[in-house]
Image 1 (spheres, one colour):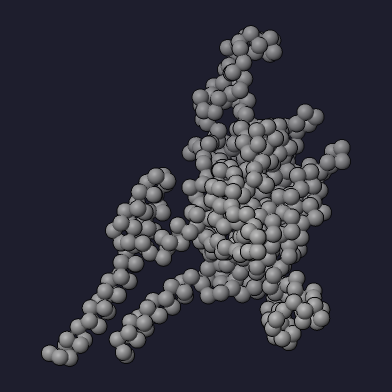
Image 2: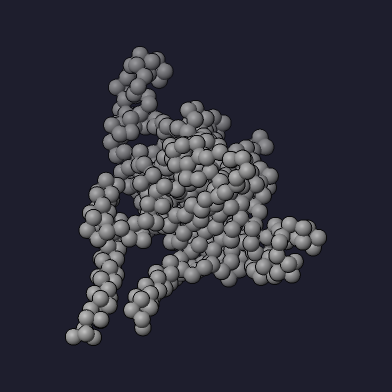
Length: 477
């Protein structure tokens, strides 16, 4: 009986630990089912029920941490102003709605267009200059301008600049694959806001022609109002519609492509440029980084934009670095991982952020779990790193804003900026012996993309192991 009395607290402790781990597993399963729901309000209620039933777990805490990060945007940060069965346009909330710390890019918006095979976006123009990037699929885009019409066959990796006011229509010319195009917009009318204008419409979207008075339309077209309404105002299929294969083939045959090189008109570059045809800036066993700026594609110069695409192999990471002048607006294309950013402003979710206090310099680490469709912003001067989970690659698209003369300054690896110091300078500023400083700076021989820390699954596994070992240690084993 004495032995039983001694072991009883241990048995109860082990039982409670086992139940806690079981609850963690059930909570994760419950939250995984919630993420499959389409409507944000349903997803939120479902997650709340999971937390009430199984308690707060590590994932919930990380999710809360992500929501409080002013530079991170999850799925619920996107709105869908255009949507039919054939396609949709998802638009990220205004950056300044998330935080006033992003006022430097308040004139910009990020959107993602998705179209089914053999589907087309109706002719439209918007009051914003745009940079298109084909994330997946193939398309034919036609641009209607005052002096002429241009058509291009686009493929994965193509970049195309479209000036504000250009009427365009986009066709997914693939018979099987979905089309995804990321669009960075620089608004020119109302800061941070843009509107699509459809000439051909019906109930939703309407045709802007139908907002004119009958007298104006009859005089402008020199014909009866009913004929004008029948031509421009009776499309009931919505912003996206299905197109017969034969018509797609005919239009694609008349279009040029990025492989044919850019065409100029009046000194302006018109055609697309394919990012993946350029040699990667960084390439090793841990991944590749492709980068294009105005020195490669002159059309980017007018908006001071750069475009980059990182392929981070599973278990690897984009090493810590910062940008000298550019904001980086990123979209997670595929995969999972996490992102850390160092900020002197604190969370600053809706406020101004903290000011630099006299005689006090400190930083806050902001972290977010990454998955398909997430958006994030890296302000100039802010060090950051992106890590891919083990077992799958992480692909990230990065638009650089204010990119002219921007420098990417690496804080670790072969191109670490502190390697530029000579021996005397290192001895002057570092308190560690100069030999140790050199060993630390030169230990990482890769550049750009390097081997990362252990993946989240291994950390979770190790966490369980440590928990049980702590229990056994407590019990005296």
